[in-house]
Length: 220
Image 1 (cartoon, rainbow, N blue to C red):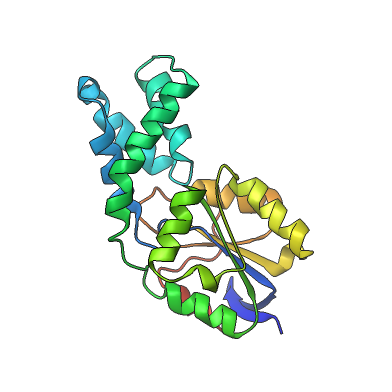
Image 2 (spheres, rainbow, N blue to C red):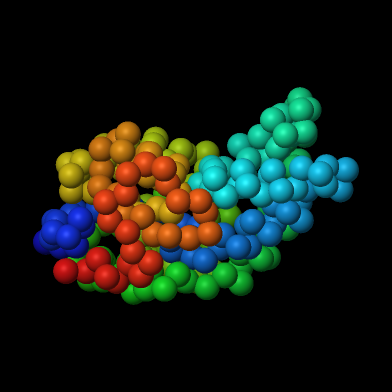
């Protein structure tokens, strides 16, 4: 049977719920923001605040996009693909140990378990690289809670379209829960429902109709 959730103050029947990871399932955003600051090469110290501000505005994008932005837009320096891959690996070596310590977000695991108990399909769709995303969920014995787990290089928009196509779901019976503009705009572009969970990332500029800090408040 479909799950019934409270969206926009009314009860909505859904067949699938898609979760962003950072700031929605896991409180990993502080760790990732710290990692970007620790990653920054010393010679670009003057760009620290500009990069921090960009990270907050653009959270949800992959780290390769973030690091390319740093070099090409802030440092005004062109970089090769090999160099960028090396920098992504260097960032990952800083980020992964910090993210390993991050707790579940308030009510998030309980909410996923409630969805599963009501036979809703559940998915993770994140800008985190696939290998690292799998590792974070494995560390928490959580992969079994999801019918599909999608990380970079899959985009938010592309991932939602794939989930709709593969599951044969109607758009109005799918929910995407995210914490950043990248999530909200992807949901709007694809045409699925969206719930905003506030985090350290900048609030979406897209219109938000349903917002909650604890996902369990959505359960009808």
